[in-house]
Amino acid sequence: MPVPVAIVPAAGRASRFGGGKLLAPLAGRPLIHHTIAALLDAGIRRVVLVQSPGTVWSGVPIVDDDRVTLVVNAEPDRGMFSSIQTGLAEADGDPIVILPGDMPFVAPMTISIVVDAARMADEPIVAAHGGRRGHPLALPGRLRADLLQMDARQSLRGALASLGSVPRAIDVDDEGVLRDVDVPGDLPRAKA
Image (cartoon, rainbow, N blue to C red):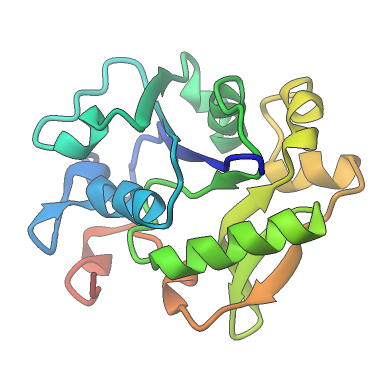
């Protein structure tokens, strides 16, 4: 059975947060720790963490885990799809799970459900809650080569649509699939 791999886009500026978002404390650990830990706890054997040039993960020991691979998006200003493509260049599994770094509230069980659904369907699967699409998204490995050839300035949604691969939503009992962290005020009300 093919082994799933995850991409964690984490190269954004976090300008709405005021910078340093992924290192912000959440339940006693840096925010990015929770995102990566959820993937590893779900059984993902390889996490590709896409960072911007010069990123230093001080105080985040999980990034030194043998299952985590750090890659640099040399031009993150092109947008999140460019970070996803940077990760795809290193992501050799199937399915390929995409979970943005600022999504620390997704439960490991939810990730497992999405991975299992993507394996069975061989199509893109996205988690939803209450009818609203969120994250993670799992892509069949067969889409990797085509996605790598596309313009990095478009969205992943647009790239998938051009391939005729609109993700199918599966509803999960996890409101964390809708909860990202954009501003500091998103943290105090959050439960990890």
